Length: 111
Image (cartoon, rainbow, N blue to C red):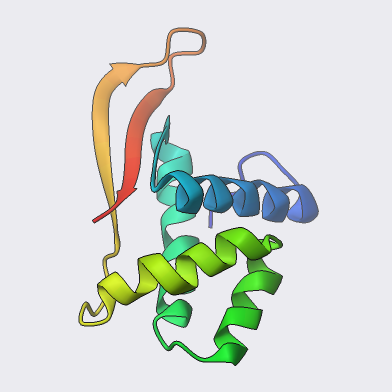
């Protein structure tokens, strides 16, 4: 588990915000480390959303803390992956470093 130089509470909030941004935009440019860290979190959420039960929608709302984002995941994104067993996200390494700090960048997107 990646810690991102944060304690437990701020780390959860950080992952939640990254996940919300990814679900809303369906594709984000971030660092490789962040992309690798967020992937299992979002893939678990998609697996929960695929079951299409009210209880699972409520779980998504509690995990994402954003009703609109949870509904988008539940009603529009998850049905696309109904037949897929896993691997809902793709990480594409950019091969170039960010200018200000030299961090390697990557694009994470839904397949």
